Image (cartoon, rainbow, N blue to C red; front, side):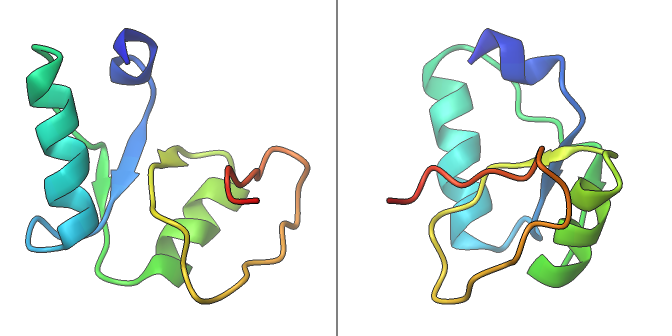
Length: 77
């Protein structure tokens, strides 16, 4: 978790469930969740990730984003 603090994090709005969960996990570890970018739409966040501008911590979604670059990875099976 400490390594993630130093990365340019991208998240959904503060009202999103995913953002609330990620923020809670950071708080449990004594860390502050401070995203560099906040977007309402996953597709926009994915575009920033494709350009190498940051990383997203996001639950597995019902859609598949086809990675344009090898640095896009999913932890989903």
